[in-house]
Length: 455
Image 1 (cartoon, rainbow, N blue to C red):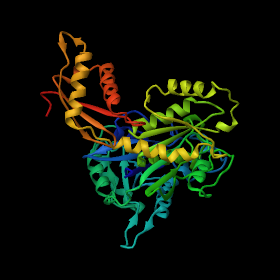
Image 2 (cartoon, rainbow, N blue to C red; image 1 turned 90 degrees about the vertical axis):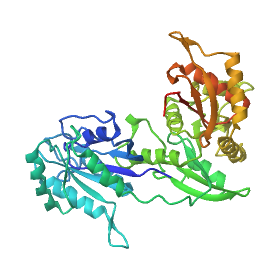
Image 3 (cartoon, rainbow, N blue to C red; image 1 turned 120 degrees about the vertical axis):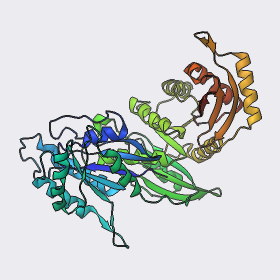
């Protein structure tokens, strides 16, 4: 299931980026005293009391300016785009944190933002409104500011919640309220195999989807960025229910155009999270690029299985060595995913497209493979006999016992004398020995260590 989404919105310079950094635990957003610093939306994962969710930091909304009207606080060229992207974020959010500034007090832009938020809410059958909006009064570092926060009741959003994002004051209380408002996760409703089609813009994702399902389900256009949303197509293939997720192309961060397309990158990330198997399309005409590697990294970070499809193969001039050259080049660049299978296709002509779904299902089957504990421990014993772990400071790693604790992705728990003695090269060696016995085609495997003193 996709994680809930929390959007941070508000006028410029109220501390959205500071709160974002507080929630995700990293300085991912630029924090600057100059209003309008955050122009790209940025998102990352956060966790509170065991509940994981995505946080979106948006550019500041300044509804009092638009178009090319000069601004004393920064370039107005971005104002309309920032407002647009924030509205899209609100539409997709499961909770909205409306940030205001307790230091400056309530301002006319705050009132305008409040109107935008109220208009964005949908009234539900039970009379409540969705998404829930939390009125956050930031920069309340002292008692006087916390008491003065009551003036924000005038906005009609609800109870003002005074916090200090910089110092962390009352942020925990805020998160308690936010996670309590998340929608209830339903039991597994859809048991289909979910396959997302991802890649940089104009790699041929929509064309491939149409070829796979045999009808025009997505708009096909030579203009990069046509698909803005993740589009689900459900059908049955050889008795197996499938869901194909076509996504907007993921651009390099510096190349993301203003407006709605920024949010399409988040939707593509969410599509990867929802997937069992990701089909990574690479344009054969351009070859593998740094952006393809970034997308592959996104897939690996989400621990999803992968099939690499080299599309537009019909447009490449070939001789008897061309496919081997492309294979070696791509696998060399994807050395952090040496387990991925490659398939050379043409979504335009249909070349080898009939092999895509069987390969994806083969990878999904490998993803669900479970190794019996007895066989896993035999693999571990033979690995240590063949190549004992190198010693560190006179101590040597010992693997006592191992078991597979889950599939999807395959995860192995190894009981050792001291996890700190496991060098990453020896971890890779253990992973490779497991793969020699069980291929786990296209699938990352996780090795987790537990020491004698670990609880």
